[in-house]
Image (cartoon, rainbow, N blue to C red; front, side, top):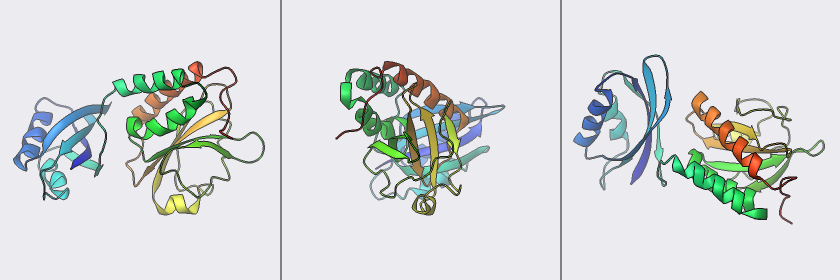
Length: 224
């Protein structure tokens, strides 16, 4: 089975090699790696690993944290492949999808952006309306969005009063970004974490900025 391991490690020569060696010791096979963020002396990496049949996922945490300066931020099952080219493919899907563009966006965003679900929402009046939702989108509706209208991508407080109780009970981390000037917003949910990193929010803003510019004039409307 494949897992997505997010680690914080010292950004120094040899750290990643030592980590790879420790994971190999327990039979884990590294499939792909993506640098999520770099800071002053540290890096945040997402690593997709395969474990042999019968191996417990907790062994990944134990193995990783035997390396000095490594801390596991999160571990969760993974079904996709980390590939930054997927973002370009997603833009192309939306641009060529016509009236289905935004449905394609929410269908593919969870895999590309490593989240649990995605929705496109709008607030044409006083009520929040979900126009499109991916598989796994919450059944409990969002009834308030005090951060609308939105000018840039943001990480939201998942414990705020406006967050539906069912979302809070599932420890859902939230991020949003405007889809151009069409009055529509992409809302992302990541159940159980990890938190959205500043670099992820920045990439989300770039992605939705491009997507907003390729949407048909006036945006798209909700399916009837």
